[in-house]
Image (cartoon, rainbow, N blue to C red; front, side, top):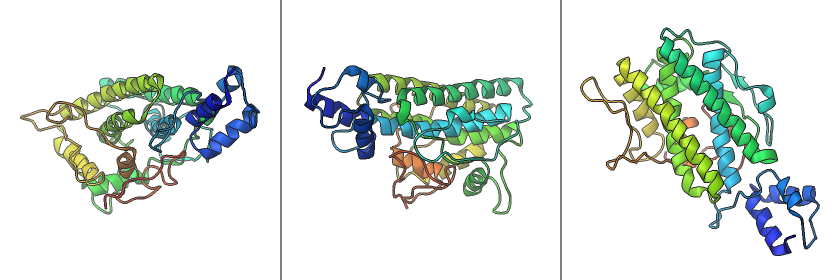
Length: 312
């Protein structure tokens, strides 16, 4: 049994926001009580996720931010390889469950190796969704509305890959698939690295580090595949477009040229770049301004972390 002060602290550390705390108290039946058993706390979904002492996002909020991004990646890769997305049973949760626009058909891969890469990454991203949902328990957010159609066209136009009247289909062929995958993978690595200092609980930090490592493997696969195809110019344009969205700092790199490879995007100390959650949202919303929706998430993210930075 725990004293009242300890219980209040645990509740504050577990909940994503004030509403979550009130819901927790009501569900656990401990409002007004001085003591509570560990069994009641274990049903809260994320019992040890803590709030930042400086008033920043809680561990649960950060993990839900990551879950939103994993929904996006899983939907893209599952559709690319299988022609279908995340099973409906794994898309409910806190917030409004949205539809997925685009996808619904497989990429006609010409290379067996790239097809195998797509299959493996699809499995990894799907597992990330399931893992984060399980870790968050009842606090897990639902899959938000995801756009895999107009968003890619907007991104390709902004990067100058196509004209203002053309459209970009990420599932049309394996080159398009790889270029579309490049938009996600480098951002995923910088997102997890940037979020790591915000996570208090070491268990969740360890899990986030593990996911970051897998995302880095994915990014390496995609970058190497693009390099082998000689798509240096297209990749550089996407990299420049991303850099134009997330602020003045240069946190993006292409894959090099036929003379010099740059398969590992890193700073002068060979350390991977970091992006804040707000900077990541600038990219996935395809907007340098402070907004709460757009691009790949037309209705925004579910959860407490949903607003991009103001880099306009």
